[in-house]
Amino acid sequence: MSVRLDATSSLSGREVLRRGLQVSPELVQGVWITLLLAVLAAGGRVVVPMAVQQTVDTVVLGDAGAGRLGLLLGGAAVALVITGICSALVNVRLFRSSEAGLARLRVTAFRHVHDLSALTQGTERRGSLVSRVTSDVDTISLFVQWGGIMLLVSVLQIVAATVLMAAWSWQLTLVVWATFVPLVLILRPAQLRVSAAYARVRQSMGAMLGAISEAVVGAETVRAYGVEQRTQRRIDGAIHDWRQAQVTAQNRVATVFSSGVLVANGVLAVVVVVGTLLGIGGGLSAGRLLAFLFLVQLFTGPVQMATEILNELQNALAGWRRVLGVIDTPVEIADPDGGGRGTARGAARVELDGVEFAYPDGPTVLHDVHLDVPATTKVAVVGATGSGKTTLAKLVTRLVDPAAGRVLLDGADLRDLSLAALRERVVLVPQEGFLFDGTLADNVAYGARGADPGDLGRVFDELGLTDWLATLPDGLGTEVGQRGERLSAGERQLVALARAHLAGADLLVLDEATSAVDPATEVRIARAMSELTAGRTTITIAHRLSTAEAADLVVVVDAGRVVQVGPHAELVAQAGPYAAMHDAWLAQTS
Image (cartoon, rainbow, N blue to C red; front, top):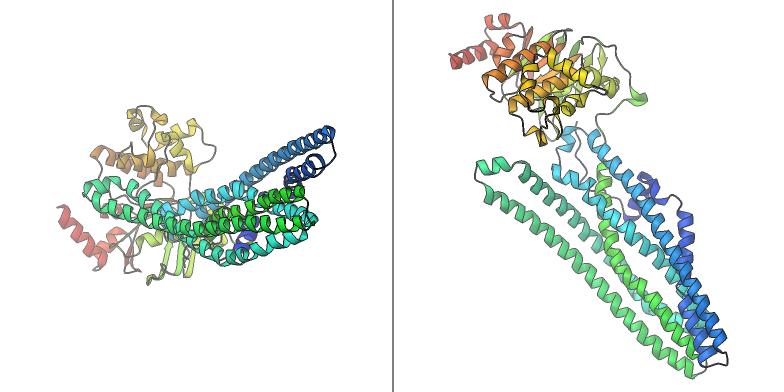
């Protein structure tokens, strides 16, 4: 039974960080060295207030001369240079570790997407699925490489400023912290609201990308039916939803940021008043009061920046949840425990033993199917649309697993075989063979590792396609374009057949193409099919009864049940569904 792709992970912020670091351990490699450098960088930021205090109290208002002033300035300059070097090293180390960790995250997510079944992938739009591996990871990258640095340095800066403030005036230090306590209490519920807002931003972003990519891929259909305005309204709606979600999130962040600015300005005013009173009473020197104001700036700056960091953090957590939602979605079609086993190569025998299957949230579409396909047999599966023919093909190639019963290859349950061994022996050729942007040679060799030009030439020769290959402008080097758009539908079918032949599978499952092709291409396809299926077990989902006539065995599927099995001549002679279909087909073609 298929599962749905998780829309987003339900983990809390802390759990997301913990789980994210499990997936991308490179993010924290060498973290202790980075922390040490960050401590030095943060500590260096209090050098200026200390130099100001000493200059005012000992030089301006004291008896020290120019020599002490030069010493103070020189020491401050050296400390600032060291601080700058440490800050640069922190940035470099964080960038390196973050890029390594996020690259691992992208690879893991992309790999997991491919491990998921086509049914699970189909529970979400392709564009939205792609956004999880691209734009959602980009939001994490932005926070880790900018917000992460700021967060790390800001926390250490607050600690350093607090320690020095307490050494100079514990009374003013208490004033500063007491003024900021209400803001800290407000930030927690604000963080939850911002987090929810950015979760909606990431979801609406995925929906928008899905709508746009769908319109781009289906541009010909949109133009052919004149539905540009309707399509534009759908895209406009998706963009509007994303905009509204983004505005809502930014409004919440702006509210928190304004609160931080108001509190920071209030702190400065309170410190000036209280510090002046302490100075008048003799408890605080002018130099310390002036330096304290510098420290307050060092303290309040990170606190105000915290709202912007909060912005990026919540955006990153929302993106991280969506990526983890992919990674944590269970894989249905996987190797058995221990990796599974292989089987001996050679013409394959296929059996379906009491197989039943149902799609997610749907009724059972296959009922108690029993079928035995001997080795080297050419089988044609026929039936009305929706009868279950294509589902049979998916089961035999283990794109899905049965809800009940077993599918056997040479007596072995497909679920006990390693996927690598299964893919070597069983190949599915769909109706529309997908072609990748590249050369003809690249596409034919896609299913076979280590294929050289000689192997490719042999494939075209054996399939009788050398005359067609000679008509192409660059032969094997001909660029096919995205999705093979530079080739006709029939030519794409020829490439798919050549790819399957080069793969050298023992069992071929062919979903017969229904598109009309020109007579010359149809002859080439028929000739290539004859060569491709020779000596192999072949199961063809037949959309033309002429294919069934040429098969060794015809399997008739009706409403999810196998109702007839036998040679064409035998089934035509019987009163039954196949004879009725054949008579109707003859009436249409005559």
